[in-house]
Structures are given as C-alpha cells and as structure tokens.
Length: 272
Image 1 (spheres, rainbow, N blue to C red):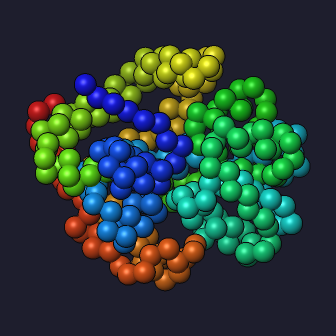
Image 2: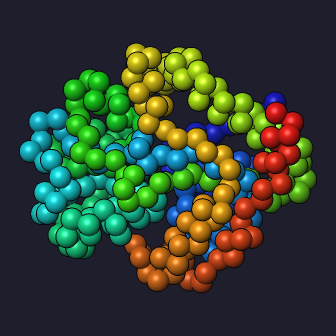
C-alpha cells in the first residue's frame, strides 16, 4: 500500500516533494530551512533522528592525518548543499583555524563513493555517515578522526507535504504511529533492529555482520519530539543562513514557528 524511493541526500527528497513525487521525507535542517525560504509546501511533523555521533570525518587507515588541522593544503569530500557541508565549513574548519582557501572541497553526494575516493587519493578526508563508517572501520579501510557532536546535533526533520496533511491526515498519523513503534524497537531491542537492517543491506548486495550494523545504529539517537530547544536551534540556523554563513543560502528569515506541526505527532502517540 506504500511506495518508497531511496535518496542519498535529504535535499534530493525535498526536491522530490516539490515535484509531487513523494509525500514524506527525512530532511536535514539546512535543506529544510532553504525549502521554507523558497516556499516549499511542506511541514515538519517530528524528528527523524539525531545523527551527529553517526556522522564522521574519516581518512584512510594508513593516512598521517589525525586532526582536521592537518587538512591545510589538502582536499576533503563533502556532499554539497547539506547540513554536514554547512557545519564543516562554518564551524568545524574555523575551530581549527582553517579559512576558505586553506583546503579544497570535492562535491561527492553519494556516500558509497567516499571510500573509493580516499583509496584513489582523490581526497584526503571525507565526511561520512553510517553504516558506511562502521563498514569501513570493520574492513580496515578507514579511520574515524572525529564525529560532529561538538559542532551540531545534526537533527533530521521528518517532513510531510502540506497536500498530504490536508488531504489524508489519517495516513500521516498512521505513518507516525509506525515510526514511533520503530523508535521503540530500536531503543529496546537494538540487536534485533540491527538484524533487520542487515537484511536490508543484503538487498543492496552487501554482506555485513550484525555486530557492525549494531555499532552503526548505536551511534544514532532517536528523540521524535519537536521540542522548544529544537525550535530555537532552527531559528539560530536560519539566522546564520540569512547572515551569509556557508553560502548565505536564504534571503529572509522564514517563519520557523509555522514550520512544525505537533498535533499529528500527538495523535500518533495517543493511538500507539
């Protein structure tokens, strides 16, 4: 009864929502706020996940790089137009005294291309998420330098098109009810959840031990509520983007208070 599509980046899913191709998507704050600025007809209804501990700056295991400060004169692979690119350029690199021009950036949108790019010496460092980081650590290809948590929690918003909310709110509530059950499963039975994800990876042609996927999922954080703290976070992010942080991607301050819809999440919780 449900069709689904796989996207490498949240902004790709957002653009598919604009095109009317999908109704629900996990969207990172940067593309979410850019979407609000551009008038994309979508609404945040919950938090999909917090991924800062599951998003890493990595190098080859054999690399001499042990700190971002050693990136001077070197190249990093980042997916352009994403929250990870934004945080790295505006917070991570400056925290090590690096300015634009001190290093090069290669736009690599597909995470599965990061490790081959490192191996080919096309880049010296990469921003890589799970399960790719744990897989690379397991097979001895890559080494994690640090994660993103001291720079940003990296929340992914669960977004739904306004059309779907208006025309079929019960279906949105049903989706959220299922998502809350999934969060409960991930928290209470993590190894069983890892086994489910292993089967999904097999469908992509990857044979990965459960212990590797379990490690990857344990780095994730699930807090579905749209809290006042998260709302303040979105306001602060929007201010940065208006001020020109990153690439100054939005022209005016969006009405972040109008962005979230907490009622659907509350209905799903009552029905769970």
